[in-house]
Amino acid sequence: MRSSGWQFGAHDTKEAFRVGLRLTDFREVHLFWFYGDGPFTNYGPFPDWLYWQEYLLDLRGTQETESRLFAEALSRMSGAPVEPPSS
Image 1: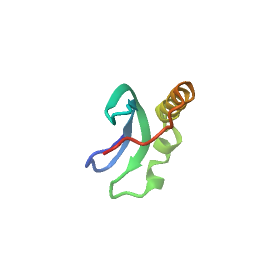
Image 2: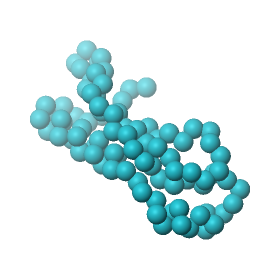
Image 3: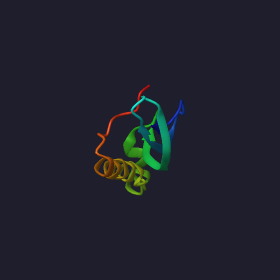
Image 4: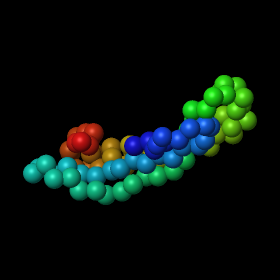
């Protein structure tokens, strides 16, 4: 889940990735959130090149990679496949 909401202008986004288990009776059990800085985003009226410093110094978090690695490790230990969450 990437949260940028309905914000306008140029800003750094935040990202959150949820990891959980889907049981055999299809119930979902939440385990962890991986939360951190997302990519710099420009929804404003000015062109991207105007924000070159922000793009150059954009510090993204590692939450997407870490959440995927955690889910894959759970999959290997349990033998259950990695699946996207149900809506």
